[in-house]
Image (cartoon, rainbow, N blue to C red; front, side, top):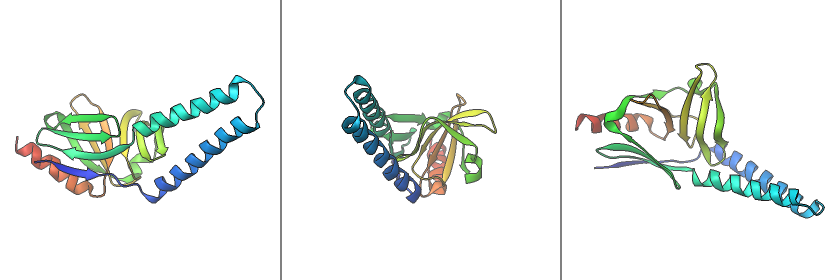
Length: 167
């Protein structure tokens, strides 16, 4: 039996997505229409489109808990954590993410995902969130930390713990 937890963008992420999209479009139009001939405007526009495409391919879509694994499904990427490899799973308070700084990550553009660094704990972790709240922290036996969000974090934790008991 498998259980799905879908991602739903919060209001802040939706607003940031619109703002960032508008800035990218305006910057691209400015460089194409108002710049003199040369390679820089086209290069910059191509760079913006490439980075935007890479972000779009990594947007988290849903969390699926199967009898064997917890799968975090993105548009193209799939992160699979075997249930037997999970050392700790717990709910996080929003204050624990207060000092999280995005490194190679999106902060609000279709959610919050990528590699973040916690400057208070000096730790690196992977975030797959669609809202800045309702966080669940997952640590595996390889000491990799994942932070996910969903509308019902308590249900996600209970589902993972129940699936582990059935093993």
